[in-house]
Image 1 (tube, rainbow, N blue to C red):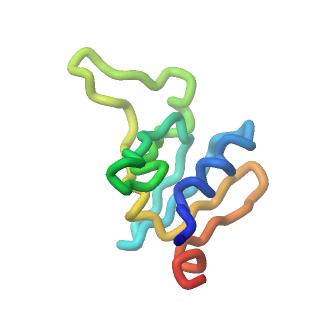
Image 2: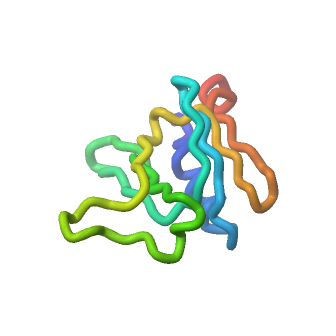
Image 3: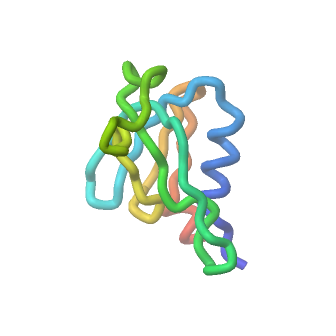
Length: 102
């Protein structure tokens, strides 16, 4: 059975007190900010553990919310679009390309 890279990233996310990260996407886009949440996939549908990550500007970490139109602050990043994640607290990197090749 193929390892679920989103579960690996989630487990790392849960161990850190500093939620600042840098996402490197498959298309070359780079996002830096603070993770404030995620959306879980439907296990019964064969989706990964996490399908989207919710990232906000680090300065907005403590005041991120939904506005009156119910739009989230920040951006949602689909897990399938992530090439690798760097966790700022310990400078560790999870490279999903290496996981896919294993």
